[in-house]
Length: 124
Image (tube, rainbow, N blue to C red; front, side, top):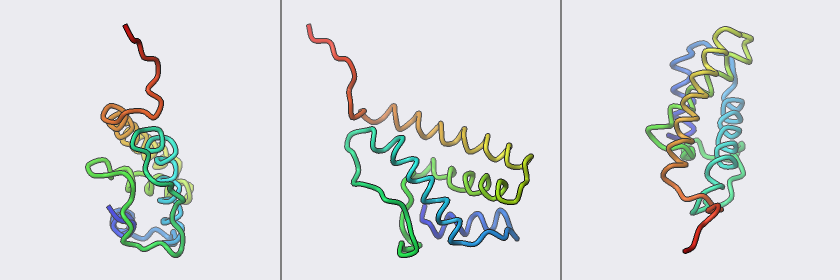
């Protein structure tokens, strides 16, 4: 999923939201920075350094979390929009959905990728 696709998707799902596109891009940057720091950088092979997205970043830039787990982007943007619009009931529901989806991605990634530090090893 690209930055453009994520923002277009949320604008369809949350028609009429007043959040500027540059703020949505900032939120996507925050989420991918979190994913890089918490997940990707902790496993082999370590991807090249991720520094987030800014005004110069192409809207066609691929986001870090792949299909089928890329639903986290829409859920995260819903959560952030609910927070910004002070919709606490919707925020709580969105946050729960996002956290479940993000955890599912983390669990799968952790199962399928070797950690940077292999932990204890026994040699006989």
